[in-house]
Length: 293
Ligand SMILES: [Fe+2]
Ligand SMILES: [Fe+2]
Picture 1 (cartoon, rainbow, N blue to C red):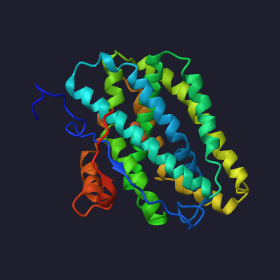
Picture 2: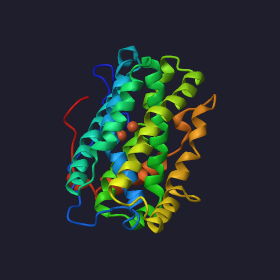
Picture 3: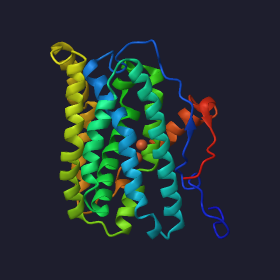
């Protein structure tokens, strides 16, 4: 353990380094990037990319509100890492959203819908906002694990496009406990976690579903039965991407819940090497972090 008597720990020293990456995004390729060009599934990820920048700002603000209560030097450094990683995710998804705009997707629509929902959440107490963040981080961490392990997704999607999502997924796993540790520090309760379930359902899930439906209509794909059936199976079928995430959601409301119960250290190691090791897929476009958060 490094000597911390003279200087604060860095976020890299606690395993949550914000990584600046210059992604090369695919242009002039197929319209739908995921699941062999499936519109339904691809549009869900367009929606996700659209909502990440405002969503991650909300996460950061809800944690920042309690930041000066943190005395523990390790948690302080973890919070810095969390802030840095989420800020960079937002920035890179903005760049990806520009690519989606070039492809003619109305990626501002999901952002607008979710911003409206998040503004409503901001009317609730900072404690409840943080509880909502911990719930969304629980969802994101399981989505991340799926992204990193789902063979079907890897085999049927644009590899250049996948790289940003792999980087994002790895970092979501690296910082998956941070918001919850702050929530525990302020004495967050199971009751608040239950309330967060309702709030996220109403103010985040509903806008996401509405945006997904509207994009599907705008793309003229609502009645593309064959593709929609295929996309539905890929997302919600047995052992499919989103089904695998949803079955972990009830754990969030257990009395003794903690994000570290999702054991992902080995998976993170594998992906750190694959993306940022000596021969890593992203090593050449990775710039060492300079900014502090
Ligand atoms: Fe993120
Ligand atoms: Fe996150």
